[in-house]
Length: 262
Image (cartoon, rainbow, N blue to C red):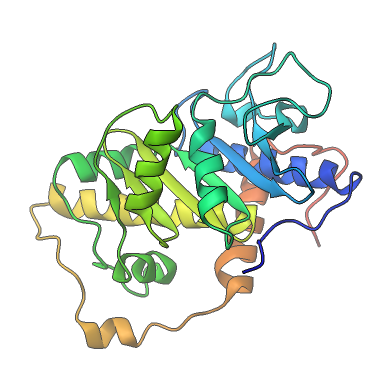
């Protein structure tokens, strides 16, 4: 099986760094990351396995203020590969490396701490497809099953990361009890948008419970009617929408150089 990775040369790493940084800002702006917590990574091809991952540097300001320079290339063992030693890889780097080792279909990994997802799980509320056309990607993720890693630990060792990967299986998203989520994709954009979709589902689940309703899935015949609108609609447009929201808030990277399409 071929490995899913970004086919980039050295010059292309700059754009990929920017994409990872924007993904971090989107997650924070959407409320999926508390202050400095959470990270995004992308697999980099080459003879020595490596990844670009959001690290912490000497001027750490949190995910909402992530710059491309905060995204460093590291080995699967956590060694800096781009000559910068004033940045530290995340403590939970094993989340990323374990997924990338086990899942050749994955090129990007998101680890975030969405409060609604954590609250729903701790309250015993199942993430089922209770919504339909309100948010089709969220409904379809739930319909196929969203697994849970049942330990609320800091996943800073390979053995813990391997446990998480086993719980996740081949699914695109996994809930980490008392912790957050791991989401994966063939692109950074896909992984981030999947994380956003699970947050939508969890927020609606919590709201239904708050109003005294029963959290129950839609009938199978209704779920079968939901179309797959494709990556262009489900991922590209959502990503573009959040980029624009960052611009409107003055939080977009290189905002003075890059303007929204007219």
